[in-house]
Image (cartoon, rainbow, N blue to C red; front, side, top):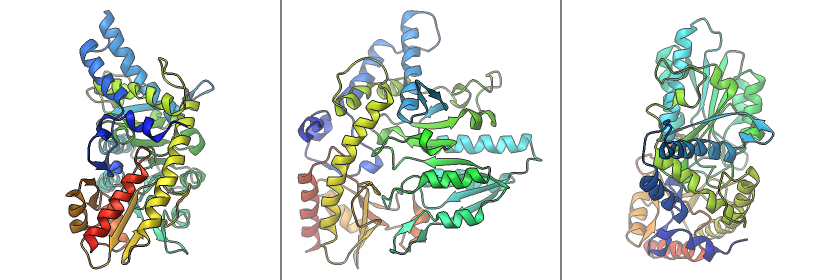
Length: 419
Protein backbone atom coordinates (compact mmCIF):
# COMPACT_ATOMS: atom_id res chain seq x y z
CA UNK A 1 0.00 0.00 0.00
CA UNK A 2 1.36 3.48 -0.77
CA UNK A 3 2.59 5.33 2.29
CA UNK A 4 0.61 8.29 3.60
CA UNK A 5 3.62 10.52 2.89
CA UNK A 6 3.58 9.43 -0.77
CA UNK A 7 -0.18 9.97 -0.96
CA UNK A 8 0.04 13.45 0.53
CA UNK A 9 2.88 14.39 -1.82
CA UNK A 10 0.44 13.99 -4.72
CA UNK A 11 -1.71 16.88 -3.41
CA UNK A 12 0.01 20.29 -3.76
CA UNK A 13 -2.39 22.02 -1.35
CA UNK A 14 -1.44 19.74 1.53
CA UNK A 15 1.97 21.37 1.83
CA UNK A 16 0.40 24.45 3.45
CA UNK A 17 -0.59 25.07 7.06
CA UNK A 18 -4.36 24.59 6.75
CA UNK A 19 -5.76 21.28 7.94
CA UNK A 20 -8.43 20.32 5.37
CA UNK A 21 -11.22 18.68 7.34
CA UNK A 22 -14.13 19.91 5.22
CA UNK A 23 -13.67 17.27 2.54
CA UNK A 24 -17.35 16.32 2.51
CA UNK A 25 -17.84 19.75 0.97
CA UNK A 26 -15.10 19.24 -1.62
CA UNK A 27 -11.84 17.29 -1.77
CA UNK A 28 -8.41 18.59 -2.62
CA UNK A 29 -6.94 17.88 -6.07
CA UNK A 30 -4.03 15.63 -7.02
CA UNK A 31 -1.39 17.30 -9.15
CA UNK A 32 -2.23 15.09 -12.13
CA UNK A 33 -5.78 16.48 -12.16
CA UNK A 34 -4.56 20.07 -11.96
CA UNK A 35 -2.02 19.45 -14.73
CA UNK A 36 -4.68 17.91 -16.98
CA UNK A 37 -6.69 21.15 -16.97
CA UNK A 38 -3.66 23.18 -17.99
CA UNK A 39 -2.70 20.74 -20.72
CA UNK A 40 -6.20 20.86 -22.19
CA UNK A 41 -6.29 24.65 -22.16
CA UNK A 42 -2.88 24.88 -23.80
CA UNK A 43 -3.29 22.14 -26.39
CA UNK A 44 -6.98 21.36 -27.04
CA UNK A 45 -9.06 24.47 -26.37
CA UNK A 46 -11.40 24.23 -29.38
CA UNK A 47 -14.95 23.23 -30.18
CA UNK A 48 -15.80 19.55 -30.45
CA UNK A 49 -16.89 17.58 -33.48
CA UNK A 50 -14.74 19.00 -36.27
CA UNK A 51 -12.43 16.93 -38.45
CA UNK A 52 -9.16 18.72 -37.75
CA UNK A 53 -6.69 17.13 -35.39
CA UNK A 54 -7.04 19.40 -32.34
CA UNK A 55 -10.84 19.14 -32.41
CA UNK A 56 -10.66 15.37 -32.72
CA UNK A 57 -8.38 15.30 -29.68
CA UNK A 58 -10.72 17.52 -27.67
CA UNK A 59 -13.71 15.37 -28.64
CA UNK A 60 -11.83 12.25 -27.57
CA UNK A 61 -11.08 13.76 -24.16
CA UNK A 62 -14.73 14.60 -23.48
CA UNK A 63 -15.83 11.15 -24.64
CA UNK A 64 -13.18 9.57 -22.42
CA UNK A 65 -14.50 11.50 -19.40
CA UNK A 66 -17.89 9.85 -19.82
CA UNK A 67 -16.31 6.41 -20.22
CA UNK A 68 -14.15 7.07 -17.15
CA UNK A 69 -17.16 7.79 -14.93
CA UNK A 70 -19.18 4.90 -16.38
CA UNK A 71 -16.29 2.56 -15.56
CA UNK A 72 -15.88 4.05 -12.07
CA UNK A 73 -19.57 3.38 -11.39
CA UNK A 74 -19.33 -0.11 -12.94
CA UNK A 75 -21.94 0.79 -15.52
CA UNK A 76 -19.59 -0.22 -18.31
CA UNK A 77 -17.07 -3.02 -18.65
CA UNK A 78 -15.83 -5.75 -21.00
CA UNK A 79 -18.93 -7.86 -20.32
CA UNK A 80 -21.66 -5.30 -19.69
CA UNK A 81 -23.07 -1.93 -20.77
CA UNK A 82 -25.85 -0.93 -18.39
CA UNK A 83 -26.36 2.73 -19.21
CA UNK A 84 -24.84 6.14 -19.78
CA UNK A 85 -23.53 9.06 -17.74
CA UNK A 86 -24.58 12.71 -18.09
CA UNK A 87 -22.12 15.38 -16.92
CA UNK A 88 -23.05 18.85 -15.66
CA UNK A 89 -21.95 21.52 -13.22
CA UNK A 90 -23.61 20.12 -10.09
CA UNK A 91 -25.71 17.38 -8.59
CA UNK A 92 -28.44 19.93 -7.90
CA UNK A 93 -28.65 20.80 -11.58
CA UNK A 94 -28.70 17.16 -12.67
CA UNK A 95 -31.55 16.32 -10.29
CA UNK A 96 -33.52 19.34 -11.54
CA UNK A 97 -32.96 18.24 -15.15
CA UNK A 98 -34.12 14.73 -14.31
CA UNK A 99 -37.19 15.97 -12.43
CA UNK A 100 -38.04 18.24 -15.37
CA UNK A 101 -37.79 15.26 -17.72
CA UNK A 102 -40.20 13.24 -15.58
CA UNK A 103 -42.61 16.19 -15.51
CA UNK A 104 -42.45 16.49 -19.30
CA UNK A 105 -43.04 12.77 -19.66
CA UNK A 106 -46.18 13.02 -17.55
CA UNK A 107 -47.38 16.01 -19.57
CA UNK A 108 -46.97 13.94 -22.74
CA UNK A 109 -48.68 10.89 -21.21
CA UNK A 110 -51.18 12.24 -18.65
CA UNK A 111 -53.02 8.93 -18.38
CA UNK A 112 -49.99 7.09 -17.01
CA UNK A 113 -50.97 5.16 -13.89
CA UNK A 114 -47.79 5.62 -11.88
CA UNK A 115 -47.88 9.01 -10.26
CA UNK A 116 -46.33 8.64 -6.81
CA UNK A 117 -42.80 9.69 -5.83
CA UNK A 118 -41.26 8.84 -2.46
CA UNK A 119 -38.47 11.20 -1.41
CA UNK A 120 -36.22 10.52 1.55
CA UNK A 121 -35.79 13.60 3.73
CA UNK A 122 -32.58 12.11 5.19
CA UNK A 123 -30.38 13.51 2.43
CA UNK A 124 -29.15 16.67 0.75
CA UNK A 125 -31.74 19.10 -0.60
CA UNK A 126 -30.40 18.60 -4.14
CA UNK A 127 -32.21 15.24 -4.25
CA UNK A 128 -35.28 16.45 -2.37
CA UNK A 129 -36.31 19.88 -3.62
CA UNK A 130 -36.55 19.06 -7.35
CA UNK A 131 -38.96 16.20 -6.58
CA UNK A 132 -41.02 18.18 -4.08
CA UNK A 133 -41.65 20.76 -6.80
CA UNK A 134 -43.32 18.11 -8.95
CA UNK A 135 -46.36 18.24 -6.66
CA UNK A 136 -47.32 21.34 -8.66
CA UNK A 137 -47.03 19.32 -11.87
CA UNK A 138 -49.61 16.68 -10.98
CA UNK A 139 -47.46 14.17 -9.09
CA UNK A 140 -48.17 12.89 -5.60
CA UNK A 141 -44.89 13.54 -3.77
CA UNK A 142 -44.58 11.85 -0.38
CA UNK A 143 -41.78 12.68 2.08
CA UNK A 144 -40.16 9.53 3.46
CA UNK A 145 -38.70 10.37 6.85
CA UNK A 146 -35.78 8.66 8.62
CA UNK A 147 -36.42 6.74 11.83
CA UNK A 148 -34.56 5.87 15.01
CA UNK A 149 -33.57 2.24 15.42
CA UNK A 150 -33.17 0.26 18.62
CA UNK A 151 -29.72 1.73 19.23
CA UNK A 152 -31.04 5.27 19.07
CA UNK A 153 -29.31 5.87 15.73
CA UNK A 154 -31.17 7.39 12.80
CA UNK A 155 -31.50 5.24 9.70
CA UNK A 156 -33.13 5.34 6.28
CA UNK A 157 -36.36 3.73 7.57
CA UNK A 158 -36.72 0.85 5.11
CA UNK A 159 -39.66 -0.57 7.05
CA UNK A 160 -41.50 2.70 6.49
CA UNK A 161 -40.74 2.56 2.77
CA UNK A 162 -41.88 -1.04 2.54
CA UNK A 163 -45.24 -0.11 4.05
CA UNK A 164 -45.77 2.80 1.63
CA UNK A 165 -44.80 1.29 -1.73
CA UNK A 166 -47.58 0.29 -4.09
CA UNK A 167 -48.35 -0.16 -7.79
CA UNK A 168 -48.73 3.59 -8.26
CA UNK A 169 -45.13 4.31 -7.23
CA UNK A 170 -43.09 5.86 -10.02
CA UNK A 171 -39.81 6.74 -8.33
CA UNK A 172 -37.99 6.40 -5.01
CA UNK A 173 -35.18 8.93 -4.32
CA UNK A 174 -32.79 8.56 -1.39
CA UNK A 175 -29.15 9.02 -0.24
CA UNK A 176 -26.53 6.28 -0.12
CA UNK A 177 -24.85 8.00 2.84
CA UNK A 178 -26.02 10.88 5.01
CA UNK A 179 -23.72 13.87 4.71
CA UNK A 180 -24.54 14.62 8.36
CA UNK A 181 -24.53 11.18 10.02
CA UNK A 182 -21.91 9.47 7.86
CA UNK A 183 -23.78 6.15 8.00
CA UNK A 184 -23.81 3.91 4.93
CA UNK A 185 -27.38 2.84 4.36
CA UNK A 186 -28.64 -0.33 2.71
CA UNK A 187 -29.18 1.14 -0.74
CA UNK A 188 -29.37 -2.28 -2.38
CA UNK A 189 -32.31 -3.28 -0.17
CA UNK A 190 -34.10 0.00 -0.88
CA UNK A 191 -33.66 -0.67 -4.60
CA UNK A 192 -34.94 -4.22 -4.19
CA UNK A 193 -38.07 -3.01 -2.42
CA UNK A 194 -38.75 -0.36 -5.06
CA UNK A 195 -38.17 -2.80 -7.92
CA UNK A 196 -40.62 -5.25 -6.38
CA UNK A 197 -43.23 -2.49 -6.64
CA UNK A 198 -42.20 -1.73 -10.24
CA UNK A 199 -40.68 1.66 -9.37
CA UNK A 200 -37.51 3.40 -10.55
CA UNK A 201 -34.81 4.42 -8.05
CA UNK A 202 -32.49 7.43 -7.80
CA UNK A 203 -29.56 7.21 -5.37
CA UNK A 204 -27.68 10.29 -4.22
CA UNK A 205 -24.12 9.01 -3.88
CA UNK A 206 -22.43 12.35 -3.19
CA UNK A 207 -21.44 11.43 0.39
CA UNK A 208 -20.55 7.84 -0.56
CA UNK A 209 -18.39 8.13 -3.69
CA UNK A 210 -15.35 9.79 -2.05
CA UNK A 211 -14.96 6.75 0.21
CA UNK A 212 -16.12 3.72 -1.79
CA UNK A 213 -16.37 3.06 -5.52
CA UNK A 214 -20.14 2.92 -6.24
CA UNK A 215 -21.30 -0.20 -8.08
CA UNK A 216 -24.51 0.42 -10.00
CA UNK A 217 -24.41 -3.13 -11.37
CA UNK A 218 -24.54 -4.57 -7.86
CA UNK A 219 -27.07 -2.02 -6.63
CA UNK A 220 -29.42 -2.49 -9.58
CA UNK A 221 -30.50 1.15 -9.42
CA UNK A 222 -31.91 3.12 -12.34
CA UNK A 223 -30.22 6.44 -11.53
CA UNK A 224 -27.13 7.33 -9.50
CA UNK A 225 -25.76 10.84 -9.02
CA UNK A 226 -22.61 12.20 -7.38
CA UNK A 227 -20.32 15.24 -7.32
CA UNK A 228 -16.96 14.89 -9.02
CA UNK A 229 -15.42 17.77 -7.06
CA UNK A 230 -15.83 15.73 -3.88
CA UNK A 231 -13.94 12.84 -5.46
CA UNK A 232 -10.64 14.50 -6.46
CA UNK A 233 -12.05 16.08 -9.60
CA UNK A 234 -13.38 19.32 -11.11
CA UNK A 235 -16.45 21.29 -10.08
CA UNK A 236 -18.77 19.00 -12.00
CA UNK A 237 -21.23 16.21 -11.28
CA UNK A 238 -22.32 12.98 -12.95
CA UNK A 239 -25.69 11.26 -13.35
CA UNK A 240 -25.81 7.60 -14.36
CA UNK A 241 -29.00 6.29 -15.90
CA UNK A 242 -29.81 2.84 -17.18
CA UNK A 243 -30.65 2.50 -20.87
CA UNK A 244 -34.23 1.58 -19.91
CA UNK A 245 -34.67 4.57 -17.59
CA UNK A 246 -33.34 7.02 -20.20
CA UNK A 247 -35.62 5.54 -22.88
CA UNK A 248 -38.72 6.52 -20.88
CA UNK A 249 -37.83 10.22 -20.86
CA UNK A 250 -37.40 13.09 -23.30
CA UNK A 251 -34.18 15.02 -22.74
CA UNK A 252 -34.31 18.83 -22.57
CA UNK A 253 -31.74 19.61 -25.27
CA UNK A 254 -32.66 21.03 -28.71
CA UNK A 255 -35.59 19.48 -30.61
CA UNK A 256 -33.44 18.35 -33.53
CA UNK A 257 -31.22 16.19 -31.27
CA UNK A 258 -32.52 12.63 -31.26
CA UNK A 259 -33.98 11.42 -27.99
CA UNK A 260 -31.70 8.37 -27.98
CA UNK A 261 -28.60 10.55 -28.36
CA UNK A 262 -27.60 10.17 -24.73
CA UNK A 263 -25.85 11.90 -23.00
CA UNK A 264 -26.04 14.78 -25.52
CA UNK A 265 -29.82 15.06 -25.22
CA UNK A 266 -29.42 15.80 -21.48
CA UNK A 267 -26.27 17.95 -21.55
CA UNK A 268 -27.58 21.45 -22.18
CA UNK A 269 -24.90 23.58 -23.80
CA UNK A 270 -22.43 20.72 -23.65
CA UNK A 271 -20.03 19.94 -20.81
CA UNK A 272 -17.05 21.80 -19.39
CA UNK A 273 -14.22 20.61 -21.64
CA UNK A 274 -11.30 21.33 -19.32
CA UNK A 275 -13.32 19.75 -16.51
CA UNK A 276 -13.66 16.63 -18.65
CA UNK A 277 -9.87 16.62 -19.07
CA UNK A 278 -9.51 16.79 -15.28
CA UNK A 279 -11.80 13.78 -14.89
CA UNK A 280 -9.58 11.78 -17.24
CA UNK A 281 -6.47 13.15 -15.53
CA UNK A 282 -7.44 11.48 -12.25
CA UNK A 283 -6.58 8.10 -13.76
CA UNK A 284 -2.93 8.45 -12.75
CA UNK A 285 -3.90 8.94 -9.12
CA UNK A 286 -6.11 5.86 -8.99
CA UNK A 287 -3.39 3.78 -10.63
CA UNK A 288 -0.93 5.10 -8.06
CA UNK A 289 -3.23 4.08 -5.17
CA UNK A 290 -3.62 0.64 -6.74
CA UNK A 291 0.17 0.43 -7.12
CA UNK A 292 -0.04 0.14 -10.88
CA UNK A 293 2.09 1.98 -13.46
CA UNK A 294 0.71 5.11 -15.09
CA UNK A 295 -0.51 4.28 -18.59
CA UNK A 296 -2.83 6.07 -20.98
CA UNK A 297 -6.54 5.33 -21.02
CA UNK A 298 -9.36 4.72 -18.58
CA UNK A 299 -8.38 2.31 -15.82
CA UNK A 300 -10.35 -0.94 -15.71
CA UNK A 301 -12.88 -1.26 -12.90
CA UNK A 302 -10.46 -3.43 -10.92
CA UNK A 303 -8.09 -0.47 -10.53
CA UNK A 304 -10.85 1.61 -8.94
CA UNK A 305 -11.75 -1.27 -6.61
CA UNK A 306 -8.14 -1.72 -5.50
CA UNK A 307 -7.63 2.03 -5.07
CA UNK A 308 -10.69 2.38 -2.87
CA UNK A 309 -9.65 -0.62 -0.78
CA UNK A 310 -6.63 1.51 0.17
CA UNK A 311 -8.92 4.50 0.82
CA UNK A 312 -11.21 2.46 3.06
CA UNK A 313 -8.33 1.01 5.08
CA UNK A 314 -6.79 4.42 5.77
CA UNK A 315 -10.13 6.07 6.53
CA UNK A 316 -11.27 3.34 8.91
CA UNK A 317 -8.21 3.98 11.06
CA UNK A 318 -8.72 7.76 10.85
CA UNK A 319 -12.35 7.70 11.86
CA UNK A 320 -11.68 5.29 14.72
CA UNK A 321 -9.09 7.71 16.07
CA UNK A 322 -11.37 10.72 15.63
CA UNK A 323 -14.59 9.17 16.96
CA UNK A 324 -12.92 7.43 19.90
CA UNK A 325 -11.39 10.67 21.14
CA UNK A 326 -14.44 12.84 20.50
CA UNK A 327 -16.54 10.54 22.66
CA UNK A 328 -14.23 11.24 25.61
CA UNK A 329 -15.18 14.94 25.62
CA UNK A 330 -17.79 15.80 28.24
CA UNK A 331 -21.03 17.21 26.85
CA UNK A 332 -20.27 16.17 23.27
CA UNK A 333 -22.91 14.31 21.28
CA UNK A 334 -21.92 12.56 18.10
CA UNK A 335 -24.65 12.24 15.46
CA UNK A 336 -24.44 8.93 13.58
CA UNK A 337 -22.78 5.65 14.46
CA UNK A 338 -20.41 5.90 17.39
CA UNK A 339 -18.30 2.98 16.15
CA UNK A 340 -15.83 2.90 13.30
CA UNK A 341 -16.10 0.25 10.63
CA UNK A 342 -17.47 -0.63 7.21
CA UNK A 343 -20.93 0.71 8.08
CA UNK A 344 -19.88 4.37 8.05
CA UNK A 345 -17.59 6.87 6.35
CA UNK A 346 -15.40 9.40 8.21
CA UNK A 347 -17.90 12.25 7.93
CA UNK A 348 -18.36 13.02 11.62
CA UNK A 349 -20.88 15.52 13.01
CA UNK A 350 -21.26 16.55 16.62
CA UNK A 351 -22.76 19.13 18.95
CA UNK A 352 -21.69 20.33 22.40
CA UNK A 353 -24.22 20.77 25.16
CA UNK A 354 -24.96 24.42 25.91
CA UNK A 355 -22.62 25.72 23.20
CA UNK A 356 -23.35 27.08 19.73
CA UNK A 357 -21.94 25.04 16.86
CA UNK A 358 -21.12 28.30 15.09
CA UNK A 359 -18.93 29.57 17.92
CA UNK A 360 -16.95 26.33 18.10
CA UNK A 361 -16.43 26.07 14.33
CA UNK A 362 -15.38 29.72 13.96
CA UNK A 363 -12.88 29.34 16.81
CA UNK A 364 -11.40 26.24 15.18
CA UNK A 365 -11.24 28.02 11.82
CA UNK A 366 -9.18 30.78 13.42
CA UNK A 367 -6.69 28.09 14.42
CA UNK A 368 -6.22 26.87 10.85
CA UNK A 369 -8.66 23.96 10.98
CA UNK A 370 -10.98 23.62 8.01
CA UNK A 371 -14.22 22.48 9.64
CA UNK A 372 -17.73 23.83 9.16
CA UNK A 373 -21.03 24.20 11.01
CA UNK A 374 -24.67 24.31 9.92
CA UNK A 375 -27.18 22.04 8.22
CA UNK A 376 -25.03 21.38 5.11
CA UNK A 377 -28.13 21.48 2.88
CA UNK A 378 -29.63 18.57 4.83
CA UNK A 379 -31.96 21.00 6.59
CA UNK A 380 -34.88 18.58 6.72
CA UNK A 381 -32.77 15.89 8.42
CA UNK A 382 -31.43 18.38 10.96
CA UNK A 383 -35.01 19.37 11.77
CA UNK A 384 -36.14 15.72 11.94
CA UNK A 385 -33.48 14.86 14.53
CA UNK A 386 -34.47 17.89 16.60
CA UNK A 387 -31.70 20.41 16.02
CA UNK A 388 -31.82 24.10 15.11
CA UNK A 389 -30.92 24.21 11.41
CA UNK A 390 -29.48 27.73 11.71
CA UNK A 391 -26.79 26.40 14.05
CA UNK A 392 -26.85 22.73 13.09
CA UNK A 393 -23.83 20.58 13.80
CA UNK A 394 -20.06 20.91 13.70
CA UNK A 395 -18.79 18.66 10.93
CA UNK A 396 -15.27 17.29 10.54
CA UNK A 397 -14.88 15.20 7.41
CA UNK A 398 -11.39 13.78 7.02
CA UNK A 399 -10.52 11.73 3.98
CA UNK A 400 -7.78 9.23 3.22
CA UNK A 401 -5.05 11.84 2.71
CA UNK A 402 -5.52 13.32 6.19
CA UNK A 403 -3.09 12.21 8.89
CA UNK A 404 -3.47 11.10 12.49
CA UNK A 405 -1.41 14.15 13.42
CA UNK A 406 -4.03 16.40 11.81
CA UNK A 407 -6.77 14.64 13.78
CA UNK A 408 -4.73 15.15 16.95
CA UNK A 409 -4.39 18.83 16.12
CA UNK A 410 -8.17 19.12 15.75
CA UNK A 411 -8.73 17.36 19.06
CA UNK A 412 -6.13 19.45 20.88
CA UNK A 413 -7.53 22.72 19.54
CA UNK A 414 -11.09 21.65 20.35
CA UNK A 415 -10.08 20.97 23.94
CA UNK A 416 -8.45 24.40 24.16
CA UNK A 417 -11.58 26.08 22.81
CA UNK A 418 -13.67 24.30 25.44
CA UNK A 419 -11.54 25.34 28.40
